[in-house]
Length: 113
Image 1: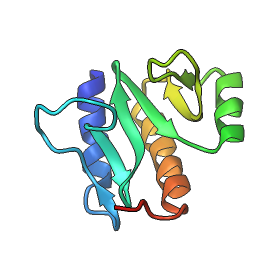
Image 2: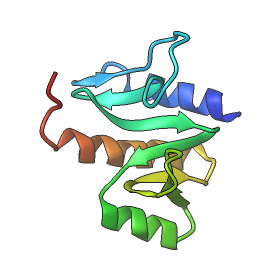
Image 3: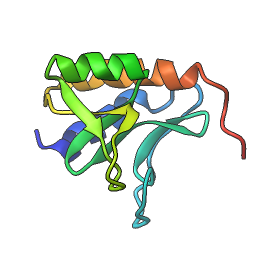
């Protein structure tokens, strides 16, 4: 399964959950335009063929140390400490880390609109 297909399956897994919005199939580009969100905040996205998830900083450091991924850099030249680029390409890992990210981001204050 290629990354786009795996992410599409991930989107299907989370569609319909309370507070979760899925990416729209549109031509819009930019940070977060194709992301899974909870209460308006991104918790998982596909970037450069890799799953990127938002997790607590300590958890990201632990996962990087275990070889599961690396810190995410949005092109600004410095890593984003609460974002993990997942380098393991299997469905179970993606779903597990995305669930963890949903729980983490969903437990924070809702985004203001």
